[in-house]
Image (tube, rainbow, N blue to C red; front, side, top):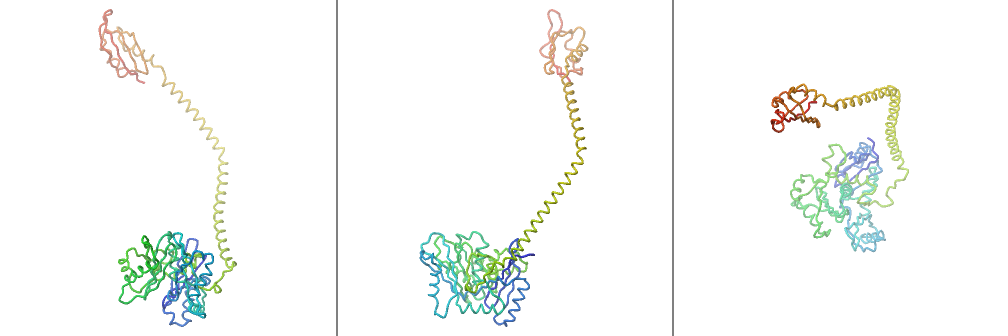
Length: 465
């Protein structure tokens, strides 16, 4: 299988590292592998590096497209409401806001921001601000360098899952979606409205509280903090992550309509990875973010000076591979066209060789058609022959000598005869025996002619053809 691009997502999830590798080919995205490095903080860096290198080697993945997801507790999320007039100079305004949050001159923040989409023409501008302390992010970067990795993007795991929700699921505009990322120690809630994050919070779970109670409370808090209107409703609620205990049935019964984020991840993958999708949703989302040049939630906490700038020449291998594939497809198509042309020429040669025989057959067919027309014409003449003479000759032979006719009429083979006879009633049986007459019937009454003293009669019949 030839893959055009690959991306590796690495999530720092509590004490574990969750790695996922997503690849793309001409048919779509393929989830190639998942791996968890358990309790990585207690391991020697060499052991962590060995396991990570084994994952990259097994997946044959490059190291130039790595997306790192840091814990939600390490970041600060704020929704800024600014005057609409500052939109033209938004970058500088956001910088001033970040500086106002910094506790001191020595403790700086790395940050990124994202304008929040609104349904109508709002008078104020909303901006989601994501910040992390420089000292915290430097620790993550040093750890990544220690295991031989250099991330291209650093963001939150929940934001990466949001990219899956908005990138795979159509129709996000105008909808309100809640994502709940479950962890053994708590829950992280992300609320998306009109394709933008408007609320984010991480909360721990007290031992006496059930998961359904915690989730219901966090949803109510998200609705109130995001200031949903009275007519607005939550359209979808998705669950991600794993709590280490069965909670799916409990949450589904407590909150109808709850679905797993794994339902949306319809990537190609080995069957054994499917049951692990929900637990590794954030890591897969990070890899999905790396596969998209313009993800819906473009949040990157990595400082500008540390970001990897891919030079244009780096695209040359991909372009050469694409051109080779196109050339192969064109060659395959041309091969079929050339074969068709060769076959057409062979057929034309065989037709030309048989042309004389075809002409002879056509002449015989024309002669047969001409004879057929003559036969049909002759049969028509025979069918139209005048039968009056035959009928009159038949009547002369059938009728007695004392019988004579004064009327004979033949109209479309309906014959009418009338005349005088000494025994008119005896004429009908004699006429019916004739092979030329059928259906002989008497018309009117038979009466004595006063002058001749004979019976006057009138009969009708049909001629037999």
